[in-house]
Every structure is written in structure tokens, then in C-alpha cells.
Amino acid sequence: MKKKLISMMLCAAIGLSFAGCGSTNDTTESSDKESQEPAEDDTVYELKMSYTIAGTETIAEVAQEMAASIEEKTDGHLILQNYPNGELANDTDALELAANGSNVITFGTPDFLAAYVPDLGILDGPYLFSDPSEFKKLETSDWFEEQKAALEDNGIKNLSMGWYFGPRHIIHNTEKEISTPDDLTDVRLRSASSTMRVAMLEAMGATVTQMAWTEVYSALNQGVMDGCEAPLSTMYNPKLYEVCSDISLTGHIEAIWSVNISKDFFDSLPEEYQQVLVEEVNAYAEKSIEAVQEEQETWQTTLEGEGVRFTEVDKDAFKEATNPAYDKVTDLTPGLYDTLDKIING
Image (spheres, rainbow, N blue to C red):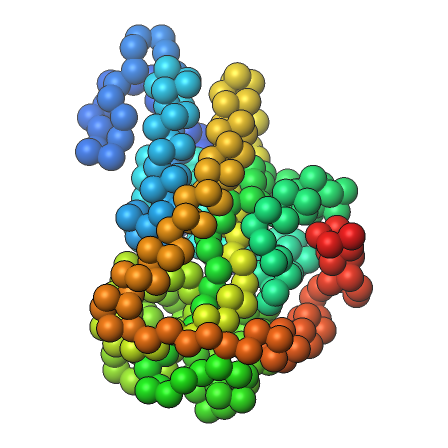
């Protein structure tokens, strides 16, 4: 009840109630982010595209290209408005808005979906995927169809689990090389509010504090934290290199970006627009993999130009250290890791 009340308050605050802003056919004044007025008797459906990273990151730019393509293919009748940097809501609140029927399309890591379907939290687990091409094996499995159905029971329709955020590494300011889990003893690392992510970092040997991403730079600058983990592009855009001089190339997660929408809002769209949305989200998932992979070396070179030192790590040691994390997340179905391992590698 409390969560529903919070969601209703958020909807009221940002003008997102499903009944009031899912579509427009009047002549009210638009903000600079809203679409031009549709032709008379036409309906324009507006989706607010929410994510917490900078709009200049590679994957965010792919999402914006997708939005332009969808608008073109629907002759301007389905418009995705861009809200980067958590301008609309954080990951948790954006999913809650979607679950309660708001016209929001959310982009974020799948660990936040665990609040609705606990087993999806495993997709943010350490060394689960060795390559983003394996995302498709997961998406086409019977197991994932079951998870999608469970999400829909909670009001959320998953459009893709195959966007690529990039390999996650550790950036820190300890002024020492971190190449094995033993080097993380007494190192204070930030974690997202994810049971799996916390279990993984603790298994590495770090001291973990959960914190919103928007607070990370300040915490590192003030010495509250020694480091955090993220893809290279996400380290660069908030200028973490100003307060952290070292990156250890752990590659502990091949990170997924999950794309989700309100089931009620999706069902309200004309069938032809539903089809365009699904097709474009999945087509641009493939483009996200290509774009992010192409730019990994560029990001490393760019960060090196800012004075960051890169350290190769003993990945076998990190894999061995983090594997017990799967057993520490008690919400997961017993044997789930083995189930997914067979899907991905079988």
C-alpha cells in the first residue's frame, strides 16, 4: 500500500498518470521536451524514456537513435521523450511508475527487476556471461518466457533483456594495484541497492556500502568510499577519474540493460505501434552490442589520457572468489545458476 501511494504521488508530481498523459489529442501548450501538436483527430502516444546514466554515453545515444526511428516509423504518433541522468526517476521509482500504469519506458540493469521477480536478480551475477552474444540464448529460452510472464503479472512488460551496457570494472583511489581479491581487503566499495551486487563485492573481499549513483563522485572525493564498479563509459562521464587514479580490469559482469514498459500502457497502443516498438527495441539491442564493443578500447585510451592507470587482474581468482555469491542470495530458486549455465553454455 505504501509503495502504491508513493508511486501515485510520483505520478502526480511529474504529470504521468496513465489516464491523463498516455496520449494527447488536444491543443494544450507543450514544454520544450514534448512533441508538437498532432494533426486534428490524430492521437499521439508519448513515452517518457527514463535512465540514470548520462545521455552522452554510448548506449544512451543508441536509445535516442531508436526513439527517432520509432517516431519516424509511426509517422510521429509514438514519441519517446528523453530523460537521462535520473531526471524523471531513479531505477527503482521508474519501474514502480511503469508497474502502476504510467507512460514510462525504463532502461536499467536487471537487478532492479528482482523486486518484482526475484530470480531475475541473477542476471547481474558475476561472470555469468562471457560475451554479450549469449544474451540471445537467454532471451529465447523457456525459462525467460516464464520470467516475462511473472513480470507481466506485476504490471511490467519486458521488451528486451539484450541491450549491452558493457563490462563492469573496479575504479579506485587506493594508490595501489588491485589484481587479486586479496587486494580488496578493507577497500570500501560502493554498490547499487542490489542483493546480488552486494553479495558479489563482499565475496571479492571488499567492504560494501549501498549508495545512489548520483552520490558516488562526492563520496569518492570526500574519502567516504575508496572506489566503485561500473562500465568504463559510466566512469568517464561523471569524471570519476578526477578522484580515482586506478582501474582494475575485472570484467566481473557483462552488463545487461533491460528495457521495460507498463503492460497496461503497451496494451493500450494500437497493434501496429506495439509491433514497431517491439521490433525497434530488439533491433537496437543488437546495435547497442556493436556500438559498446567498438568503443571499449576508445574509452580506455581516453581514460589513460586523463592519467588513469589500468591493471590486468587474475580473473580466475576473481571468478573463484565470487562464485559463492550465488548461494548467498537466498531469494533465488535453488539450482538456478546451474539452470542458466546450461542455457548459456549447454
